[in-house]
Length: 455
Image (cartoon, rainbow, N blue to C red; front, top):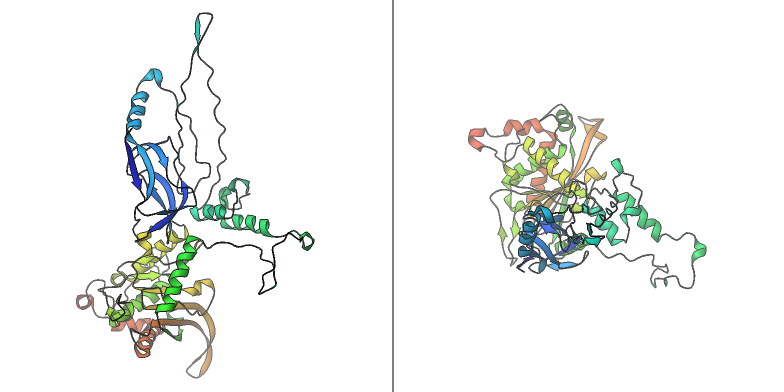
């Protein structure tokens, strides 16, 4: 026996541990190099871990739902047994079809995993001088396949003890949705009527006088968010400035512009304007030094764009956004947003931002007291673009108005710089043609210059 031990690697975000969501293989199964063997949940995403070895699975370390430290054994693979199996398979007289089976609960977009057990030899018997082969074993019943959109839904069901095979899917093509799982555990924890309360009911909470209906531990993702938000509030003396901007001109012009067969988003223009303003105020896209005594600025901007997903708020990163045009920004924001909502972003795309934009207007709200995405030093918030009464040349007229807010680290700069940044972004939104008129030529600014909000 030649065992190769594969330890849990750092999946690209400096993590120290990960939660095992589910195994994709089982002991005795043959695996190939780069075949996914497990799904793990890190602080930012759910990812598949591929095997670096080919062979037969000897041991799985850890149970589903367990936390495994980086560097701890994850799986052991027997390479010698794999070679012996290949040799046996090459002999026709000993070859036998392997029973086919699936993992049972399919993750749509992630494929199914074949589970092949150890072969059981067929034993012949002698009857009346003739060799009689045993009847073939009956084929195992095919497991019920439960389509699931993402690992997040499966993890939610596991956390609440919900068997996916018992649910009635309401999604398209029979897909189990987050709503289906939430409805299942909601009905399981809701009492049927007040009359069912007995002496064995949970004791009343001493502060509120209400019975505790349930205690649900934070998920790993929510714990990570809580730690980051707590650290941001504890370490950063933040201040906020905000302004209402008349977006009527930009809103109308954008709707007549088609780039790559689609109308670019309002957010892509705001992002381009913000990047141009950051080029003149790089400290707002910088970082306080670890000792807290200085400021690091960067040659460029990695733009974080907050996205609401079934797992919660995540921040995909547009790398070197300062080099991008509106067209490029729009395409990348759409790509990252779609992948984030589908739970398909790798950890590398969720780390390394230097400035964040939070488009909370997409959630139907006008303003928010945003929390800085530590270790950044500022975050720009964008509210809904609504028709409101506005005074223009002494007359009250309906205009498209958006509220912008900038939360910044007061250690890094003062209100004058923050207000200047926000005013520049607002002015660009109100007069986008004037911004284009003042932009330097490509020969002077360089290709992809951050100061030119080109399409």
